Length: 502
Image 1 (cartoon, helix red, strand yellow):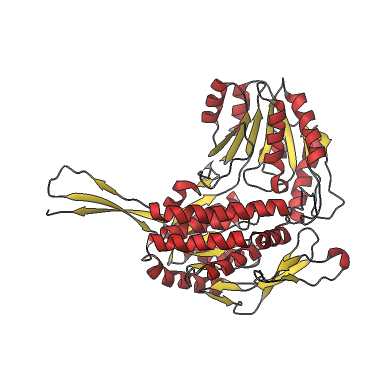
Image 2: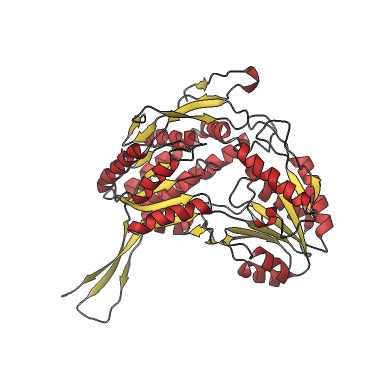
């Protein structure tokens, strides 16, 4: 691979990380070409660990967004006619290039997102897996022949691509959230316009470079980065342009509702993965060592900044004290704060200072109402975007951390008496993305798995994401499913054809 580009730094102590010159792009990718914004404006991408500027990226607005939609609409006319085998081959080439460049792609994620290098590499392998999976699913889009009572008729069901899809993705998984959507869309025969999060556009642009190298035709994959200030206007275009047939969004429930209102005017197809508030229930019958290990993995991956990470721990009174002690010990032993590029670091920075403020506010609110700090509980001296992994006990359902998604390294523990009480608390939220519980009682496992009002359940397991399995939630956690054999259906229309006069 080509060399490493070491970006300039203003101070030695905050020097920007070395990034791969072969994949570092700062312009929009539209219709197979790299374009600057029409007014030549840019916005900075910052390293959350140091606050150092990584690069200036083209700040696209509605004009560039409409150009990208137009390019996607033009490309759709030919891409939809490409055979499923050809689409499969191209997606496989894209996957192969991701694997060949996995270390370089991981460096980009650590630089713009902050997650430790090991986690970033794990994300790249996960992200590439979606391209591999959907390269295979592209050849498994099946219709039906339906038996009808009329002898002179035949009924056939076809599956056809919906058209241009707007793909709006978050910063916490800047590669995987793109490939999980785009892999399915391209496999189905759709074309896409991607708007990456303003904090992490470099991963989306690096994927564009690899898509270009893989031979993905011009206009099939487009990327329009933009600043926080221009995001509302760009988002409106992506949701209202007549040429857009489908919207796929991952982000907050509040933003999702705004996009749904835009989509309603033209009745566009929509799939959304929105906020979570995952419960993690530990019953008295649980293996406390396994439960604590699962809790650590579920809560502190990406410093607690995942949509499926546990937000509240519900622990039955008989095992409560042992669990809290075990989890505290594991946190002290396994979690190490620092720059994601440093050896041995497991806890990188939060994405920005606003995220740190929210964690701090939740901790202060809980303590003011009687919660006890078992571990952590304050900002880290490593840097302004770092917060210590924190464990709270004596938490109640009235505290903010038990009512809102924290999205940070905070583990609040609530004590409960009965199974019914735990399930009621878990289901009290208006969202339902993921839920976890530990139990060794087979009857209880079936009862609780069926009663939890979430789209995904981890039973004696703290990590549940897999390319082969459907990802999505219920209630206000979203619409539709991503990944798995179900994910491609989000980009397909079902057409019934009746042949008469036979």
